[in-house]
Amino acid sequence: MVNKKRPLNPINYAPANLVKPVFDTGAASNPFGLSLAKPAAKAIKLMANAMKAAGAGTLILESTYRSYSDQTAVHAKDVAKYGLAAGENLAARPGYSEHQTGLAADVGAVGFDSCRIRVCFAKTAPGMWLAANSWQFGFILRYPDGQTAITGYQFEPWHYRYIGVDLSTAMHNAGYKTLERFLKVPDAPSY
Ligand SMILES: [Zn+2]
Image 1 (cartoon, rainbow, N blue to C red):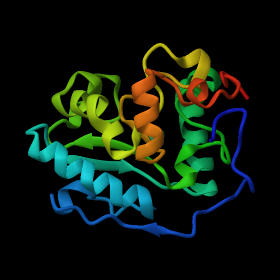
Image 2: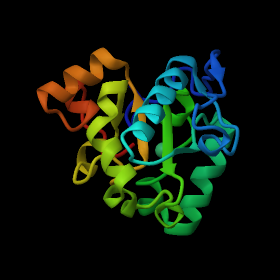
Image 3: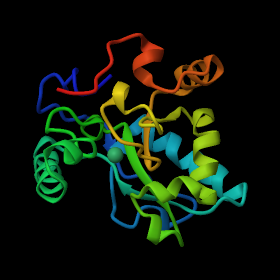
Image 4: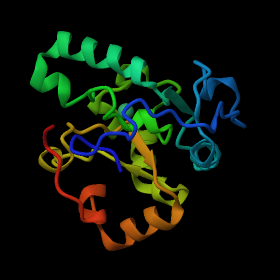
């Protein structure tokens, strides 16, 4: 559980089990050669296969594991571009990003470049399929629309977090929108 109130411990934590998922859909799904922690890598491959089989498109990994120092650069770039408040609704401070766990992935789909890491991804066929079905593969849409006061992040229809099928199924069945409320930890709108 990582959010603006709960940093990684240690702050510069790095997962030991990073692997580059090799997709049945081929290199198109991992064009940047990105890595995830092993359980998330295995699950995202299954999710990409199911998405393809459903006719909902070819999944692309846009950003996955980011180290403490990678995150320092991402945070600085977004704060410079959007200002502190809006920038921090998009990019975590280093040590506070789910991407540092190796269990989070920003995804897109082949042919939907205009909605790459943009809110309009939610309205695309791949975005809608992922929102409806990711729980079956252990992934949750971590920053849903209208939940910024709880999660601390704007709507990010591209950001999925692996929590395992048991937890994602329980969360889905109980109808929770956020991991904070499902796990009954304090809301994390700010640092
Ligand atoms: Zn993300």
